[in-house]
Amino acid sequence: MPVAWTGGSRHDQSVNTTPQKRVVAGRLRPGVNYPVTTVNFYRMFGPGVDPRQHLKRISKWPKGVECPICHSRLDSLNEDPFLAVCTNEKGCCYEVSLTERSIFHGIKADLLLWIGAAWHIAEQGKSGWSIPGLAERMGINQGLARACLAQYRRVMGTCNRGSIEGRIIYGITGLFLTDKNRGEGSRQEVQVLMVLAVPGPEIRGRLRLRVLGSGNDEAALPDSLKSIAPGAQVITLGTAKKDEVALGSRRLADLKRDLNRWIRNLHGDAIHAKHLQPYLDEYCFFYNQKRGIPPGLIFRQLIELAMKTPPIKRKPPKQAGPVNSLSAGSSLEGS
Image (cartoon, rainbow, N blue to C red; front, side):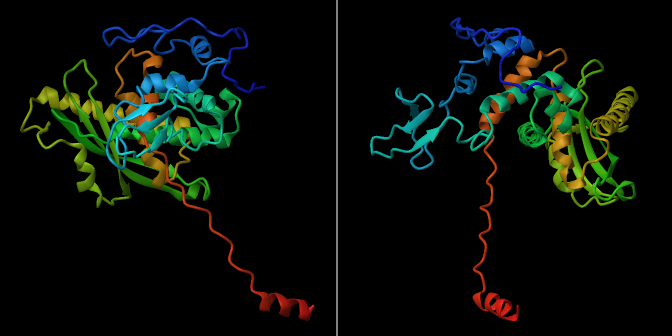
């Protein structure tokens, strides 16, 4: 039976009161600037620790934040360290909070739960989480787990937007998806563009994935080719050696099998075509990580990107229209 995650370890409820040392010469110290293990994470974000302190230190807030009115620098206040005010002498007095321009703005759940979800996503790595799996691991409801995964996939998508330079190879593969609302008879093929850099035989290179459309619809191909930088060299039989072309083709074939296996095993093909791109962004995010990178650095990168990703502007709820008194009166008279 899952236990509700409260940000602390059941075996060690002590609070880490040791003053944390500053980063020297740009180097990050394991266990100090980022967690190494789950127990270490519980100690860093345990009871009595304000998670906003870690967000402020990781994102170096308010460095780089400008006033949207006069474009002046923002400085945090001594009275409230999580509130920044415009420093313009004209008296702009614009205020911005720590999480106002991040995905954490306006969340209803505890901030510690969202940070804990980032750690579990980073710790799981390329294997990924399904909604029921993350909910069971953290002891939360599936609605909150769905919201956390959706927002962090938006964060990972910011790393999948740039173009790739150098020597590349690209291809198109088809993913067979099933609409879970319609059943097995609604399987459709979605075309995905794969752009892969091939720097050497022992280096995986960087990857970009873009959804083209369903079936043979390639109308979105020109926009998706923006993943290729203008100066990039496409590896073909006319521009490269035969061994290099064979290496790139073999990597694309392995990538196709791995991507189809990842979608099928983790999500059971129950992904709608219009929701496929965030899942591809998640796959690219972990594929492009260096081999052997600790999950603590991936967690720190997720938090840094989350603090720079603006929140979703939600539409205001529709107000109910006025009640037609004439129709209401006529119904009462008829009864």
